[in-house]
Image 1: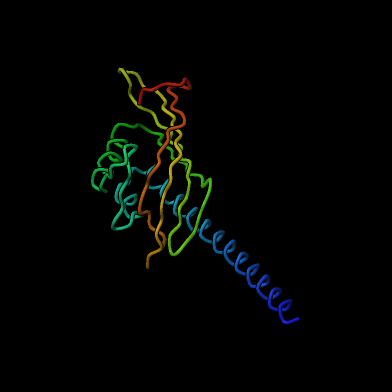
Image 2: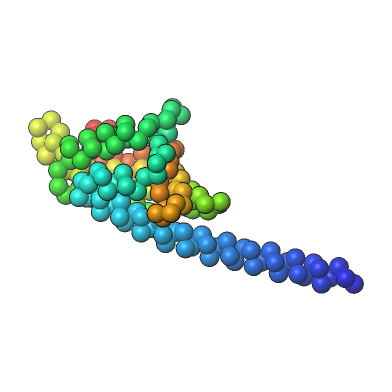
Amino acid sequence: MIRTPLVAFALLLSACASIDSSIDSEIVRQELEVQYQTLAEANARRDMNAVAAIWSEDFFMVGSDGSATEASEVRAAWQDLFDTSLDPLHFRYSIQALEVRDGEAVATVQQEISRMRAIDGELRRVDTVATQQETWVKTELGWRLRRISNVREESRLVDGVPSNRS
């Protein structure tokens, strides 16, 4: 007889933990969406300092070959994107999936970049879509991006036509 109340209590406790977890996950999603909007705006302004301010102190990127790229190298590549792109420069981030655990959030994010760029002496519109995994860490300053990995380019269009030109 004692077993039934204990089982019911355990089930109730488990259900409450699941509810709390989904509420926490939704709050984290909302907080990260604010960070992604801030990041998109900083990119549109070509403000590398504002972009890097969202990174954690130990930020790095993992290449397709598994090698780590330090923040300074990522910063240089990002600055090159800014320098070779003409207005309008537009970024959009969409969280596709999110897992929250122990002060970290792992987001699968779709990143869309639209820009004008001179290719072979002609001004062309370049649109790219990539999906990547981004690991965020909760700090005193809020969520900071620690790691980008598993970057998969889904499409690259030049003037609306699929292309491998950047």
